[in-house]
Image 1 (tube, helix red, strand yellow):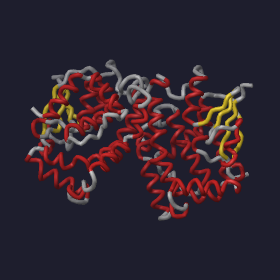
Image 2 (cartoon, chains in turn purple, brown):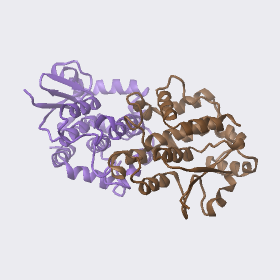
Image 3 (cartoon, rainbow over the protein chains, first blue to last red):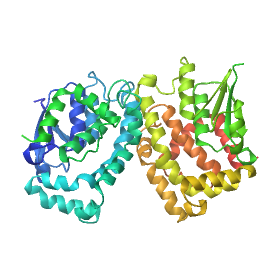
Image 4 (cartoon, each protein chain N blue to C red):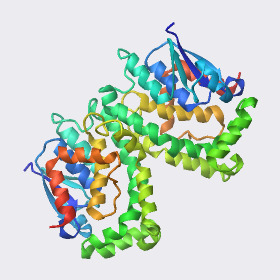
Length: 238
Length: 238
């Protein structure tokens, strides 16, 4: 059994929101691998793939299962060295790898967190009913306040803060077709995962039509037709 | 005349503080180029290299002169394609270039700005006397308050904020010898320039001995002996 199965977070109507799961999907497509995906509710994650994992994505492959998007990306790179590299020339010893790790570390506090203030109530509406108590409990502990208090404030100002936070990658998108230069690498997928998440969970327009990141995101969609199709399907519902 | 002259900001005792000038020095060393440097006070910059430039670094080469560290790095890469690349495989079309541009865009608001709150009074003490009125005027306009008000607060908390802001590159330093992987590239020099600035202008310990960035910075110093020597000399005074 060498099938690859990606276990992903699922909301109502099988919407797949997780930015980390989208990174792995893009990595699988980049490597040209066959894979299938399976949905998991938040509260079902501990039982997925034999159990023992706290978060998705979880990648099942052969007899093993691995969680954490960054670990999975490195696993795919090491396991399929003859497929197109996720990190470019130099592989895990070159700047494509370190750039990806820097963005991986940067994006969650700098971008995901302020974006949560835009979308957290939408997320609450869209998660599966059995996940609601768990979601409220864990998020209110993390934020130190109710989710309503966490996302208080003017929507336009909150969206503007997210857009401003994206400036380091926007500066690149102004100058090159992809965030990794002439072609996309895993660094691109880290940022693309964020936008797949945004459009899966909320109608708030984090990515403005005139943002230089918009044509970049469209290039990502054009490059990965399966993902473009499945992300649109899940976004708009069945 | 093909001599390369780098015009740098100079404080009292010929201390060279500018993080942007250090980036260019490191780029010149990386390319293995001969160069000399000349000091300029803040208020002398508009007259440097024939005039017309508002900021240092200013690179004079042949009949031309060019300001802006990022423009200069690209000029050096284009002018000396047979020397070691500042951006690695793929050059200006690869992830070493986009990584550098992302860090270039990220570091000034995310790191330099909070660090200014630590060092701005030290800078005021160390700039050349003829620069003081200009410095106060431009900074107080930029900050919207006096420099004393700008840097109010607990020193330890301000230093902690800078250290926290460095997390994206610290994560890389934990995993690889250089911020660009196995060998340093211009992305490394952008961050190194920040630390040359810190130690040139202040005794505040932004870089803690147990920070994973410390052995990385020591590797940079070990790789560029001329810079290691000249940055220490100017830091401690004549």
